[in-house]
Structure formats: structure tokens, C-alpha cells
Length: 307
Image 1 (tube, rainbow, N blue to C red):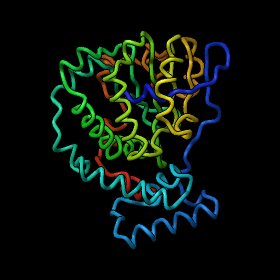
Image 2: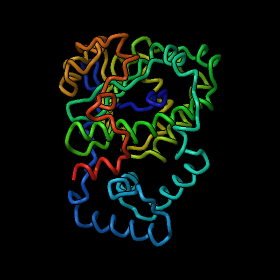
Image 3: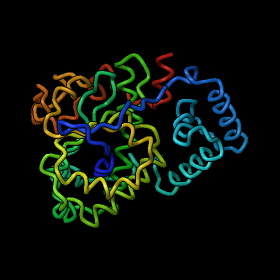
């Protein structure tokens, strides 16, 4: 979504590329934790259980997202978890896939190209945005920012309940994060008007507070000269863990990107060889649409299937 404008790195490393350093990947398995972290996880579950906050879906892998987001500070992780539960209740996140209708979706995708497309070399779903093609004024004639926010939440729930489990099944291991490619070709400061900035703030809060630790890696390409000014606007909204997951490049990005995603899984406009019928933007190609992996199971169910 448009919030990916805010996922940027800050250090120039020559040849037009910027990198945030070593990728901050998330260990999925509790047994891979240090002993102190395992104990924190155990205590966290006990506390949440005693207070009646644990849901059936909340396995250790899910609880770890909140602990990691708060550096294993149990009190802060608990506050974050409680706020998430309250927000989900208020917005109706548990049923939003069924209750929220977004008939303007196809029109919006023409004005703001964004889509999932296959997987990276680690098996993570690849999410792509072409922000340089964003037509803000026309988008706001078609829908509202409030409806875009609900659409954003619905897309999150679809990703978690359907697409990530399918990727896990195909990979034969637990896939818990995503790989995002943000194409800034054609992007100018006109894309960052006041309405867009306000929207970015809102959904950045949603992503960081209520869907923590789902971003595995972000690869920003075709970063324009205006990028530094954009970064100055959005940087204060991001936590340091998010910043560490970002790599930013100018137009010479193909070789680096192909180290992370196979050519047949990348659209041609990103230096790959994929030409989906009707366009990669419209195909929604990935294991989630292949019959072998199509069962719409929850994330917890996919983990059990792998045991």
C-alpha cells in the first residue's frame, strides 16, 4: 500500500545505492531463541492466558512478533498486544474479509498499481508497488482515504489467512514474512501532498502496531533525486527495526534484485522475465492461486501441517 513510501534507508553508499546494513530477519521457531528469550516468551504466554487475552490462533510464533517488536520487554509487548486486540474489535478485523466490500478495487489498481506476484528465493510472497504511476487526485475521486484504510486491513487479513499459508505449504517450511519491491520510477513530490502524508501516518501506525514483524525485506528501486526530501518527511514515523530491513537503489538495481528473486518470478519492468497473460499487475500469480496450495487455511493451521 501507499505506506511503503515510508520504508526507506538513509545512508548513501555510492553508485546510486543506499543500504541499511544487514537484513533483520525474524527467527520463526521458538527453539532458536536464546534461553532468556524463551523464558520471556513463556512468561508472556502465561500472563496473557491468566488475563484471558489469548485467542485460539495465538501460537508462540505470533506472540513472538510482539516480543520482538518491543525488544522482549514483556510489559511493553503486553500493552501492544492489548492495543491490537482492542483495535481489531473496533475496526472489525476478524470479519472484514466478509463484511467490507470494495467494488472500486479494479479502478483503484489502475490509478495506484499494487499487487502480490509469486515468491522470492526464500519462499516469501513478493509484494510490488509502482508508486511513480500513482494518480492521487483521480484516486480521491474514486474512493476515500477511510475506505482505502479498510481495504488495506482487508488485504492484510487475506495475506495472513490465505497467501502466507500457501507460501508455507509450497516451501515446506514456515513462511512468516514478506518481500516488498517499491518502484519509485516517475515519483515526484506531488505524490506527497497533505492527504497522502496523513494517510501514510495512519497506515504506518496500523502496520507497525497491529501487524508487527511481517516485513522481512524491502527493496526500493528507481529512487529519484527527491527521495531524500521524502525520507525526511516519513523517517520520524518509523521504528529502527523497520529501517534495518530496507535497501534503496537508483536505476541500476537489477543484478542485486535478481540475487533475491528468480527472474521468472519478476515482471519484465523490474528486470525479470515474467510476462503474465493480461499483465503481472492483474494476475495475482502465486502459490495461493495454485490448486495444490489453494486451501484457505489459517496461519496456525499451516504451521500444524508442517509439523
